Length: 111
Image (cartoon, rainbow, N blue to C red; front, side, top):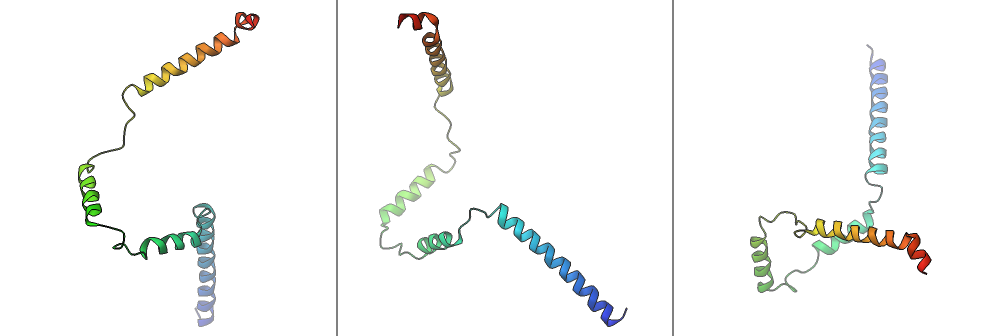
């Protein structure tokens, strides 16, 4: 192959590759990052990382936070209180019974 043919092949490959990268980036930006606002994120990052932590944190706060982390180290996701599902089921049954009473012809005639 001559130098010109190699150059044309390189340019064609580069064009196809850059178009592919462009399509991937457009897809990522339109689907995954649609709701992402870089200005808001930059301001949030600036506030988080450029504030003076020592002015508002005392030793007691640090110790209480460490104690809380140590106590909750192995705590997993919270579960609903015992019998919460049964109470919800009973409430739904009570609501259905009330709806049946209200929609019955005897109740309508009594009004």
